[in-house]
Image (cartoon, rainbow, N blue to C red):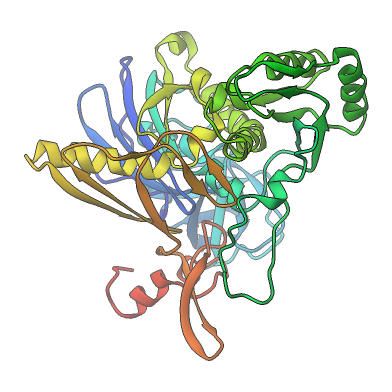
Length: 462
């Protein structure tokens, strides 16, 4: 089954009661998984980051059963409970039985659309890609209890949501008179000589200036009127907002007003509040504002994602206390989900690649390294000269973050980069086919990509 094939001959190994060690990197196209079982054996698998498995139909029986090409590589019953659909189709059918030895599957009802020999099919469990990968390496069927797992996760979920502007609906609070700061920015623009200037709107749906003021030394010039602010917050809540960011002028010198507003917002029912003074307590209102709003914009999405993965890992019966989840930060460190902030997720995947390259180099006795990580959507490059290099302000998409991160350069070029003609010239990227539909060779109706070109040139094993 490709993607979703586990490295032979390890597929189907059943774990013992001890803890599995699993490392997962979720990118824009693929999710890669490496695992060490309790007996010390290494396993690996690769799945689409959409969380679905893809296969082709080998045979269709008269009673509506289907035999999948890769079905014999999976443990008996592994696909039971998955939902199957023809790639590009709009109807799904549940799998009732999966015969691992022969690859035959039986559906809850006779498929109505396109289930014929040679057709590509998608198999979905409804779980996030890291859990699908963990099920593959541990041979845990859907509905079965995971063994105890110690998972380390790097993910670009936040990065993709930011670049595609699929974050939470939020409001930004700032000092009265500075509502236009996010529109003005620092007056730089990417295409300096462009006559047609296209400026994107800021991430917050609304920006609200509040009457308060601090001096440069943090002393209070204008007090915070709590009762007036409470009435404003009540009005904001009627418009459906429950996610907010806060950045007041000179709030890094004195957090009294930001802290008071955060408390009022939470008392009013806001579920996610990002306060600039707590996230980036440094000089520079613009950088603090963008750091806070990025965290609020992505916070609910990242929280839901990590909770879904954590909840899946908790399904370990009496051994749930042995399972754990740690997430890679942009600075290259691992933290528990309780201490992980969305703003630390934006270079999570690339940072994991750098740390992995450096660790491998050190094992080989090399202390000068160029880390080159090409994935399906982008390529990341970093330099290591006896020590990690850090930046304390970095730009990701439309925001500049005032937070530490490994020094990584990224270009929008990967295996899924779309090949096209632009004004009569051949061009590659920056758009990517991603995991869905993926390159044309994946059989899901995707566009021509670098992967397809390499396949046509004979550089890839089909």
